[in-house]
Image (cartoon, rainbow, N blue to C red; front, side, top):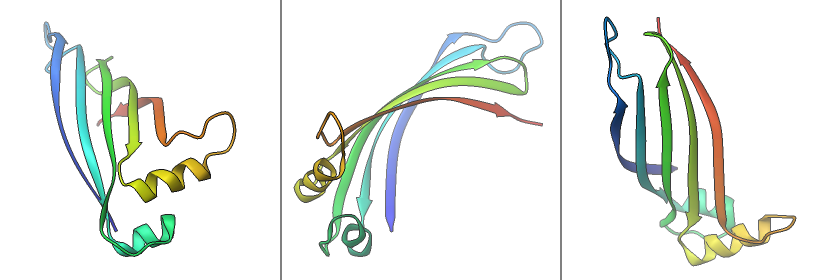
Length: 113
């Protein structure tokens, strides 16, 4: 089992105008922490204990294209906080870096109807 808790806030950059209900452009920022039970940690690193696994910070720029479509580029930075989990992540990553930090980004498109 993995539990995640996050806190965040959305800042309006361009307010809604005319007949629009949603703000045209906003910035959402947040941060959180993940917690794993012994079974999850055993699967990841081979030890049986409850532990905080990772922390992260994230940001998303939410562009309301229409009343029903949102385009949102996002980025998040994750870091392993438990020593054994961090060491296992460093051993797992192949290639140019052996860091336990992960940078994730993408583009989200959401449609509501």
